[in-house]
Amino acid sequence: MINIEGLIEINKQFSNGKIVNKGSLEFAISQSKSTKDWIKQLSFVTRAILIDHAFEEGNKRTVAALIASLIEIHKLAYDPKKIDLSIIEILKKNISNIVKIRRIIKDAIR
Image (tube, rainbow, N blue to C red):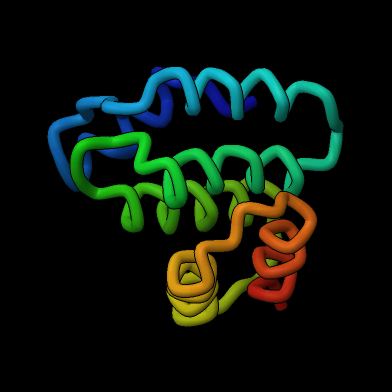
């Protein structure tokens, strides 16, 4: 289960762990609890971090690490470059639709 404390710890690997949009992050985590689909759960949190800029710094790297760690937990293969490209696509196109974010993340998994 994704939680704020865990996300802060991931962000601290790249930055200071300071949340600047706590409401969005809390909302995303609460929404993620409405589904058992782990990729959809990840999509809610990805949106909050990337689009709503949940952290002061290190948002892209935090999401990349989160995606990679959840894929590894589920023992799936992935290409780190595809994860990076997925993050760039979400940002460049300012994608906020959870279904689209889910599809992009799923496409990054081999």
